[in-house]
Structure formats: C-alpha cells, structure tokens
Image (cartoon, rainbow, N blue to C red):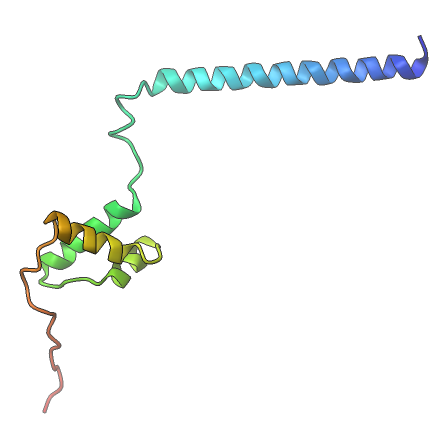
Length: 111
C-alpha cells in the first residue's frame, strides 16, 4: 500500500470513530431526557407563552378598571399585531367582556 492510501485509510477510520461516538452520545442524551420527562410532567413545567403573558397583563389591567389595547398587549409580550387578534378572539369566545367604560383621563392640575 502506498503511504498516501494508508494515511487516507487512517483519516477515514478516525472520522468514522468520531461519528459513532457522536451518535452514541446523542442517543444517551435523548434517552436520559426521555426518562426524565415522560410526558406527564411536561404540561406542568412548560414555559409561558406570549398569550399567557398577554392574558395575565389583560386581567391585571381589567382589575384596575382599564381596557388594554392590542398594542399594549403586543408591547408586553414582544409580539407584533398579535394582541389585537387575541382581543378579538377573547371577545368572540366571551372571555373578555367589555364591562367597563372607556378609560377616563384624570386632571391632576391645581386650578
């Protein structure tokens, strides 16, 4: 065998061993994750969604007698034009009743 063929064979063998090791490490990681989270705990430990943050802000504002706009909801959750869609959907589903009047502007000047 030529020296160049021999070095190519060694290089390919080493690359193959590294690939097999990476596959095995990935398998172990996936197995450990699957055993740790069997699916029942995932619903309880999920990250809050943008809709969850908007809903929490909406409920807080409604408790103070305000009706937040879709733009406010977008600002809180860091979304774009999603707040208005949610407000519309919540109204249609009856989850957001407009029971208060429009917010009033209080004059705090000492006249």
